[in-house]
Picture 1 (cartoon, rainbow, N blue to C red):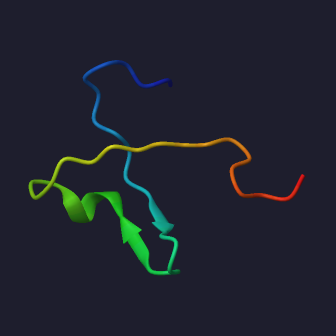
Picture 2 (picture 1 turned 45 degrees about the vertical axis):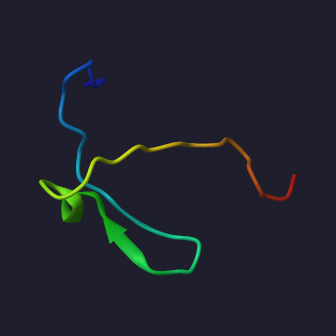
Amino acid sequence: MPLRVGDRAPDFELPDQDGRNFRLSGFLGQKNVILAFFVLANTPT
């Protein structure tokens, strides 16, 4: 089911640029989070 404006984002875990893993839920109640996705950024074509 697609997310709608106002829905809570599903939890996920991803590595940062230094290889450390971060989980979205780890920021809950602590910080605002902005997610930016760049299709094919810095990837070989």
